[in-house]
Image 1 (cartoon, rainbow, N blue to C red):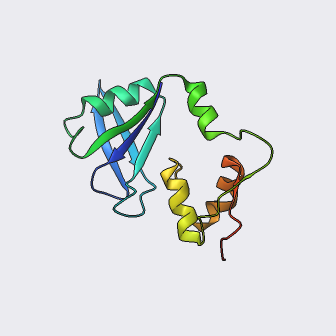
Image 2 (cartoon, one colour):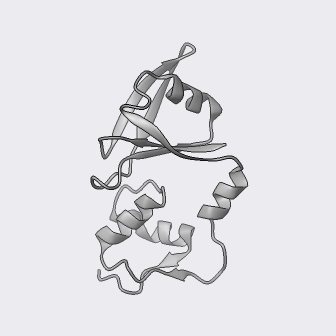
Length: 129
């Protein structure tokens, strides 16, 4: 099962969790504004249990969505057909970064755009560089 967690107030944060004698660092990243918060996507059941057992769960961060079937998650985020989908509403680099962040991708900067465009099989015909 894949779960996506979202910070409630921050654009990026790493939190330390202590669970069953293990220390886990959960790195929430990809937030760009008040609309798009930092996210963490994981399929590791141990990390999911640690996140949900933490007393900050529900206040500092929350579960945004979950996918029961991993193949369903992959199909939603993988290349569906060989022809790239054209996204006309993206007109700037910031719009493109926001688009990928809303898709759940971990975006660190402008250098990730070409990789993410290939991964999500999209192109932006109206984007000005």
